[in-house]
Amino acid sequence: MNVPNISMPELFFGGATLTGTGITKSLRTIGDLAGIFADETAWAALSPDKLVYEVYSHLSVPEGTEGGLFFGLTRLFPGKAGNEYFMTKGHFHRKIDRMEYYWGLEGDGILILMDENRSVRAEKMFPGSLHLIGGGIAHRVANTGNVPLSFAACWASDAGHNYQEIADNGFAARLMEINGTPQLCTI
Ligand code: S6P
Ligand code: ZN
Image 1 (tube, helix red, strand yellow):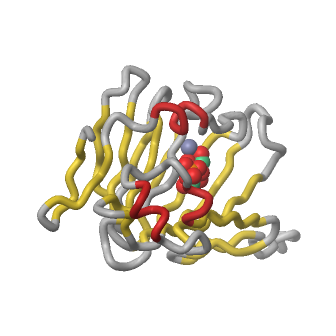
Image 2 (tube, rainbow, N blue to C red):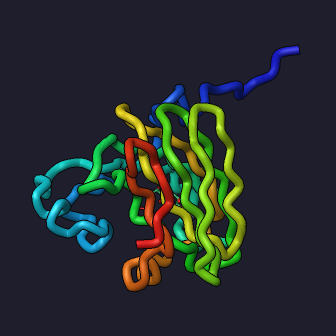
């Protein structure tokens, strides 16, 4: 029997790219990351136009809708400000109990996780790594390699983002290159 209405998907997730209908793209440059890095002199010496990461998102419903899912792909470029690896701004979710999956697609990095008591731990990211970010956990990713680090994310459409807490107080530990290796430091 003939089954009608078999169509091509509207979205294409190929390795480390996300294309198709309704994808939005946002960019974060060095200039957008004021106050993020410990060494402000090293940060200021970098070109403000230098691209640190780009995020491709598929927001399937209006932001804040209960019950929906969002999908994103972040490509974080290699580099450092002083001894600190290029990293995402990092955030808690505005609805703080909302969880999220991250998974590694290309490159190497570290996912830095901080709970509401400011206790920090970290997980290695690499192609095939899967990370469940629990409720109440701030999350930030650093690229520790020499090539772009790409990861996918899936999160609740009513999660929102609380960047202010991190802007005000940062994470309790930073990922620094010490003697050639990445280490979590409480400076
Ligand atoms: C959204 C999800 C990711 C990040 C992206 C950039 O909840 O965690 O899509 O938005 O990786 O990081 P940030 O911290 O600048 O939003
Ligand atoms: Zn998130």
